[in-house]
Length: 65
Length: 261
Image 1 (cartoon, rainbow over the protein chains, first blue to last red):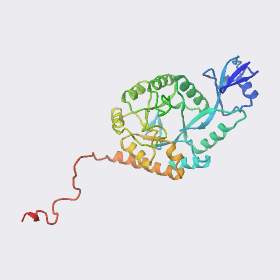
Image 2 (image 1 turned 180 degrees about the vertical axis):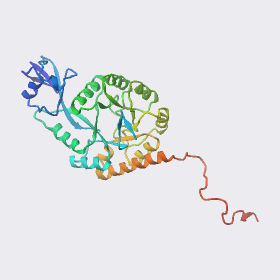
Image 3 (image 1 turned 45 degrees about the vertical axis):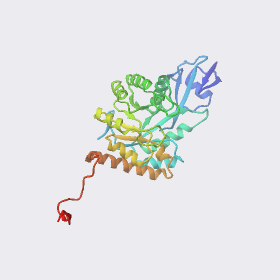
Image 4 (image 1 turned 60 degrees about the horizontal axis):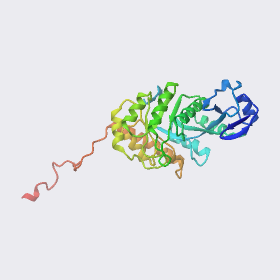
């Protein structure tokens, strides 16, 4: 299926967020994830929520003012 | 003691964590500032990246409480989702809510801000809204559940200091019991002192320290200025007047009335 991950179109096989992070080589400890503007809490990363066309945002802590 | 959402705040200077020459200087500047609260943000992580991990370790080492922001958000939906991501990432209900309405001035979109503040408050967030000095907007934010209000001094990163002191003084007087932080636009320690002298509870700044020639020394200077401003406010500042009033006693002045004889 095709996903938009952090603004880029990506081909992916994983249906769960945890598998997707592994498939795309993201670290998992210090990230938060939203799917289509809805945050998916860490406790739901094993649910098969991902489907073709979804927009996934993967973020981590950064400097801010 | 100053409190934000029931939490005692040990310092009246809050600082940002961006734009420092190095991570080490950032840590030293936070320490020198005495700040008990630092602002942080979140950004897209790169595949295979560890940028977030490295930064977060540095911040936790400082022991400061974090206030995540929604910097760069231009719509209510972006700001609300970013706040939710920040709560998931940093484990705090505190959020510095920014909804930007203009790219050149980074002026808050106060209409979107009030709407986002109400939504987030209902979700259990403790919202610190970055707003203008507008009295009615501040009232709407308080009505929406904000227990802290953060009006700007001047546009973010402009270093102009308090551009509109009269409306800020009015805002302070109108809501005397709501903790208020002057956020953005401060360039010099004297600007921070000015904010505290006006009765504002604290100041929040980043660029003026991070981009100083010596950020650690500037952090110390801002700490001292915030303390001076607050002490002056508590001591009671004299009211300005138009004409002179001699400070040295007039009675007993040598040669007084001598010209008339």
